[in-house]
Length: 302
Ligand SMILES: Nc1ncnc2c1ncn2[C@@H]1O[C@H](COP(=O)(O)OP(=O)(O)OP(=O)(O)O)[C@@H](O)[C@H]1O
Ligand SMILES: CC(C)(CO)[C@@H](O)C(=O)[O-]
Ligand code: BAL
Image (tube, rainbow, N blue to C red; front, side, top):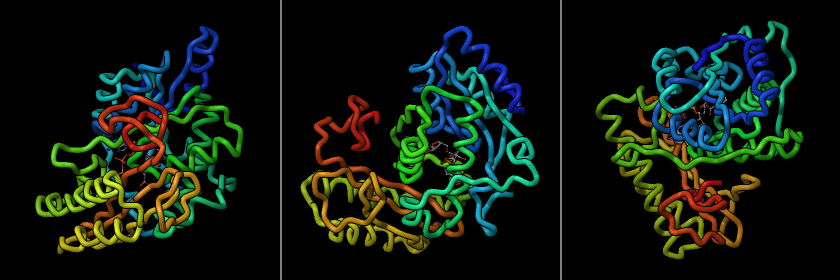
């Protein structure tokens, strides 16, 4: 496996692979990799001849008071995980390599980005769409892999690829959790031992809401109230949002009808903002236990 830091080196390697007729999968990350990222890389390695992992804490998606400086970083450890998972190339640029000092061009999405995380993080998705577009242009992958943990991001990237004709297949991958249910996240490292316990209120609420919906509840308010009650019972938790939206357009719904819904939350545990969610697709017949089809119920592969 190679690790490179310039766009020119990535382009040169990609050109060579293309000459050999090889397919390329891209896994965009911000580093400090864990089993969640690893699952994306392993999947990409199974479905492509070569896998590129980008490892870049993208400054343009952080607001002025957010954690850009303190975001955890450990590039050597990341390289080991990438190699074990089957990556061929890790791209680890400096911010100056990705953004010229006078860069002033952004990719902005008018819809989907003003709800959920976009309300609390108003410039976030502009930064995500811009950096992901740049990565797509640099790597020119056949497929790109994104986790359902950032479900709004997955919906936004799917829409961007459709609207801008990127011609890249976007593959959504299920949420990988700790044994006790907490969704794996680089930001979990911010939690003290006491906060780590308190953070379990997110997954408890997700599992409870998901069970209500699987058992037939179709009224969003009933489900959301039950989920909020679980979170509010935890004194260290402060809700940013708990909402149900349609998964394609990210618009709030009152009832679950025939379209897939995303039930998503962001919750502060102390100063750390964590996210979690479930997706429910009323037309999915999967057993709910493993990747087996092509829907977005949260269990299937896409
Ligand atoms: N637990 C997880 N399960 C599946 N995919 C995940 C998980 N955590 C992150 N990912 C995916 O990995 C990709 C890179 O995410 P990122 O580097 O921001 O990691 P993160 O752990 O989510 O960090 P953060 O703490 O900033 O949310 C994204 O597509 C994200 O959805
Ligand atoms: C997609 C991404 C790597 C863009 O910086 C980031 O938003 C993330 O890690 O999910
Ligand atoms: N996983 C999303 C990256 C961020 O929170 O900025």
